[in-house]
Length: 321
Ligand code: GZL
Image 1: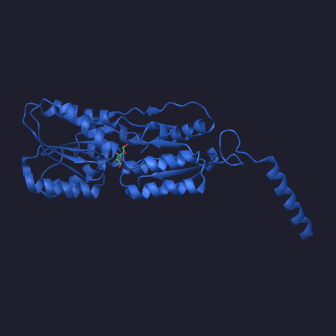
Image 2 (image 1 turned 90 degrees about the vertical axis):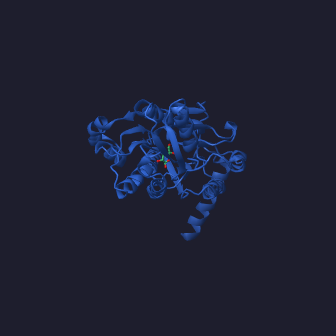
Image 3 (image 1 turned 135 degrees about the vertical axis):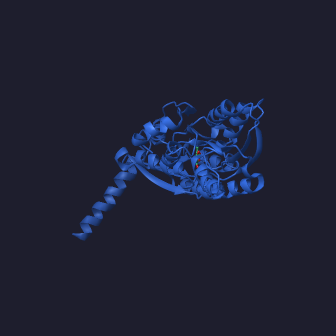
């Protein structure tokens, strides 16, 4: 019996070889499952967790995917190594949320040479857009501008002193939010006392804010944190200094994740500009379109809102993240 089975196995393999078992239209292995390598930044913030959850839910087996997930612990070199590993594994498509904008040309060229399409989600990178199929994300410059417009509206003419907690150095989110914010407060009498990266994390936001408070004391009137998590870390430092966040130091942040909206509802934050992390379904649809050879837009921007304390109180019970 064993001999017959082995004969059948050989014949089957031979038949498969004859058919050339080419990849079915729409990409994916012979069974139609699309294997996607996803190079995530890491798990630096509440936003990142919500984004990862959204991506894993969209790239499910039920939706026809096998997801190979890598979180690079906010280390650009580890993220590039993960993409190289996906290429070596022969995945059908690669998705990247680039930690920083630079250093991507070589590995993107390797993916192109391997005929593996790359789709970007969330942040962007500085390589030529001929090296990736499409990007879906947010308008970071507008997010920074909206935060600056709130500061201008509430503090222009008061010679207020402001400090900034910047996101990860070299990331498109930090660079573009800084550019938008700076353009919005141009021409006002607001003094930017200092601006330093807190790397989008609570811990580093707290440490940098402690340094600002030691240096400038209670002359600080306003904090612009480029994400909720750094703002939440700064709350600890502000309270430890005997100051009342939201009153002694007014705080504007970006993201609008649950804990940030809770701080806003509590009056510890004063304004939040949203940055929508729920990109998974859009990215999954893009991957399927690209593999099916359908023409796709090079860039898709997802709309953001902006919230006051009253908005947060009303929205918190039903917010999906
Ligand atoms: C923005 C995203 C940023 C968030 C941070 O789209 O890249 O990275 O604002 C996250 O919370 O860490």
